[in-house]
Length: 165
Image (cartoon, rainbow, N blue to C red; front, side, top):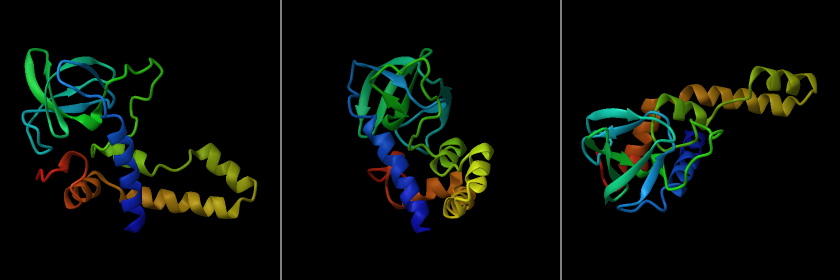
């Protein structure tokens, strides 16, 4: 469980760094594909719609770790960790680390090597490396959306910082 905490904490740090320059009236870009636009500044709020990676919006209001945006004529809230003040490159990673607790971000937290890289490590007799890859792959199976969400709630991090339930 200690290793899962470390992995989740590292993902959160990556998400927090990107939320620094978000201010009212400024433009922001979605850095997590399918980031939820919610009806309240709370991770348990009702989902209005999913936002597309790289889209630009103007910030109407900031409340703690949340930014209110106007999207397609609807007003809603997005966790600032899913936004950035820098326009992403066209070749950017649509599934970059975030502190949101989707299945995709949970699996990114501890993904193992692809089959080709794993086979190479075994062929080169990197026994310790192969064992570490197997360990990471086993840990990855334990890092589910529910585990990440519960961790965020228990430690008041990410969208749950500041006591959000």
